[in-house]
Length: 150
Image 1: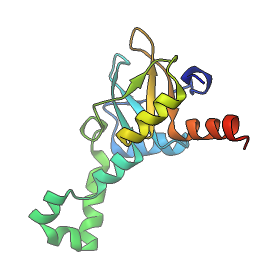
Image 2: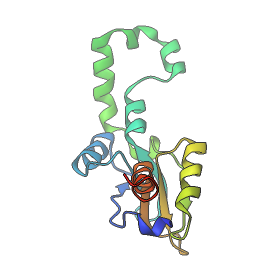
Image 3: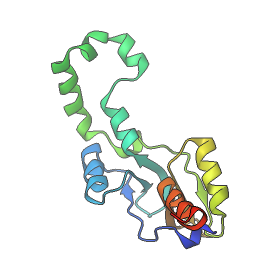
């Protein structure tokens, strides 16, 4: 089975200048957990997920150890969370985007997702323009349906 057979072609993207709040709204409104990030030329520049947004709301290990009092005090933590609302996607996104072409094998892409610990890959054409997206759930559902008759 090929990626082209199951990929979503109506891809929701996020502008790299979007804020955390705007990005969270895009993901929630479209019931998706992540999306490709594009620049003002509509070029793929990264990928953002709920996990990235969640990480932006909480301290890194270094931040925690530098000032643990801020992160232990729940009122201060809530205030820090409010301050995160204006963080830009370009500062939170993963820049190394895993892409495949539409002819890629689903089994190969599924293996790549497992090895790299990712949940989605962007499908691009020869011109590197976004043609679709495939999620781990897409692969899972299709393999179960086709191979295990579920």
